[in-house]
Amino acid sequence: MTVKICDVAFEPFVEIQNFQHELALNGKFGATSIFIGTMRDFNEGDNVQAMTLEHYDGMTQKQLTKIIAAAKTQWQILDCLIVHRVGKILPNEPIVLVSVWSAHRNEAFEACRYLMEELKANAPFWKLEKLATSQTRWVLKNH
Amino acid sequence: MITLRYFASLRELLGHSTVQLDIFEPHTVLSVWKLVNPDFELPENVLTAVNMDYVLPSHVVKNGDEIAFFPPVTGG
View 1 (cartoon, helix red, strand yellow):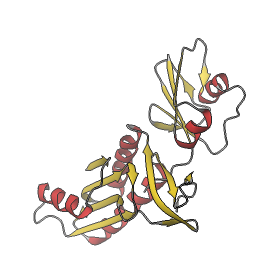
View 2 (cartoon, helix red, strand yellow):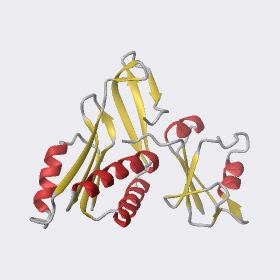
View 3 (tube, helix red, strand yellow):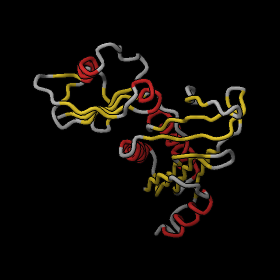
């Protein structure tokens, strides 16, 4: 179970490939579920040129670890990987990756959805958008 | 000594990110806020944490605690 906070751009499919390569699970997992969140160039009807993601270093990792532990009590997860970006982000760059490995698809689908929803609700991240007009604003709605 | 930390829009609103102070009597998260920000009521939507775990404003704090105040989270 791994949580990574990245302050530079990351490539989610490379992260998944490298992580899976290190797993001692050959022959054990039958399902891998993946969610990737990517930055849009629009929000609330406005064009967005960049975003800065702030977080509470330490609490972020603590909350994500708790979320993973809660997921493990509900589903038989073999492993999972959460990667979240912080710092300055540009449109089309990945913000978050949640990936779950399990024996069967149901656990992978449901745990992946749960981890992502709990991350959005509880992990202390905040988005500051820079609009095309150069005006900045904090994101208030957590869609 | 306790440490107060503010994040995101709340940090910008207050103009600083960290406050450290000694407490000599029992305090809750809310009473510490009032002590440090007497002219500014704790906004209703602000979330509170002690030592990186979510708590209610009624949570009792002790010396050595790190108390955080921040707006609703928007990650992912």
